[in-house]
Amino acid sequence: MKFSIRILLIIILLISVGAYLMYYYTIREIAKERIEKKVLRVVYLPLPRLKGDITLEEAIALRRSIREYEEKPLALEQLAQILWAAQGITDVKREFRAAPSAGATYPLELYVVVGHKGVVNLEAGIYHYDPKAHVLKLLKHGDFRVKLYEACIRQTWVKQAPVVIVVTAIYERTTLRYGERGIKYVHMEVGHVGQNIYLQATALGLGTVVVGAFYDEEVKKVLGLSEQENPLYVIPIGHPKWRHEITIKELKDYIEQQRKKYKG
Image (cartoon, rainbow, N blue to C red; front, side, top):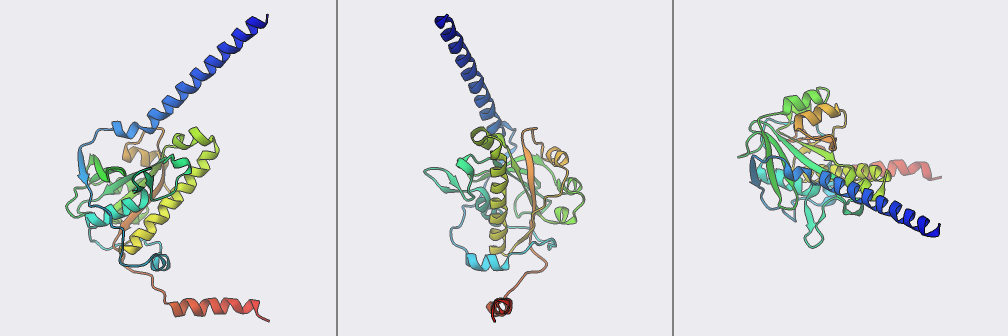
């Protein structure tokens, strides 16, 4: 009887291990699916800069959500710098990226929708960013901003910006390790990426805004995403028609005014 129970337990254990391995390798294939997409062209981006023209403090003070853009293209160097700030490699030994990720699972993917004459010397199309090689992979030819604008409930800044970055997530990369709580970690991570894009765009003299109101399935259709990949942010970027400014005196006067309620 004891022998039979042991055999039964071993069988159950083997079935459990087999099921786990099948699940693990299925998820691993999902995580790698973008590599297998048909690539029409590879664009080698200019290398990122590690020093800018303004300080981090200045970028934080000047950051604003900008929804009005001039009809002026971005330089390829500007686009490359923003992509690196969002997901680029900052530790070549461990392949850590610019934005923190729970367990370095990196569930996010970046797509770039480039309009007609949206970037100097870059054709209109939908591109996928490879952070390790710092390249753009062309997936679709053409200007898809109007279709993306329609998927984003007709928010005009989506079709007016020369470039739109779409951040997507493959949740399984993180939930495989952390379970359902991993979904929260993915949402935290996309916030980190969004702020990096905001600050880098500001430092480059550009304007941007993060958009969360859109029809998920329509955005997926425009980009040609699989069922496992979910859009989280749509981020138009362009040369702003106006810029926010603040002086240290304005900030000092405001803080001193607010402190009066704490003084007797």
